[in-house]
Amino acid sequence: MKHAISPEGFDRFKREWEHLKYRERPAIKTQIADAAAEGDRSENAAYTYGRMRLREIDRRLRELDRILDGARVVKIASPGDGSIRFGASIELLEHATRKTKTYQLVGTQEINPLEGKISMESPLGKELIGKCCGEQICIQTPRGKKTFTISQIIYA
Image 1 (cartoon, rainbow, N blue to C red):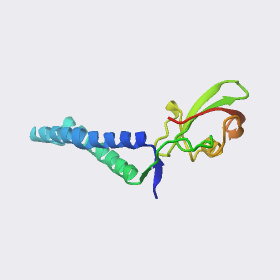
Image 2 (image 1 turned 120 degrees about the vertical axis):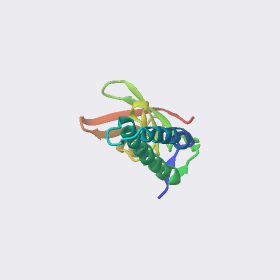
Image 3 (image 1 turned 180 degrees about the vertical axis):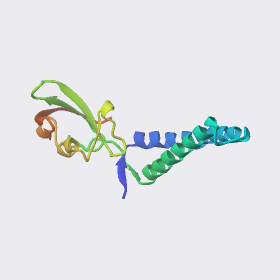
Image 4 (image 1 turned 45 degrees about the horizontal axis):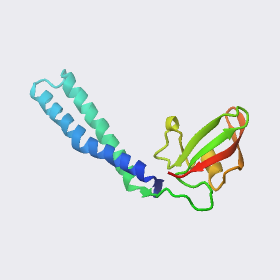
């Protein structure tokens, strides 16, 4: 099944794949060959570490292959009706604290809470889809219900 991903997210994953495949993996293979040439592999830390790192790289490459093969790149654009769709950055005003927070709706592969990127599949993401500026939403969190007002919607 295809999953939505932004053009920026797709490019970031593709660059990571290329870096691992064409830079890191060949360098590690060279290190492993050099370490193996030194003799006894059972007590050779460089050889053991190199093999372990090669497995990690191969595992990440398989994961990136799955992400890139299953990606449906979605162009981020305003729908014209002012509603929230994939890729929108949304500024929310929390009623209890009167603080604003900004989130961007992205695909499940791109989430990064530290950057404010949340999945469309998350409870907050599902609640935001289709809403417009000025509307209020109420979300159940582990600390209780929180009410927000959508103060701004931005499409990059």
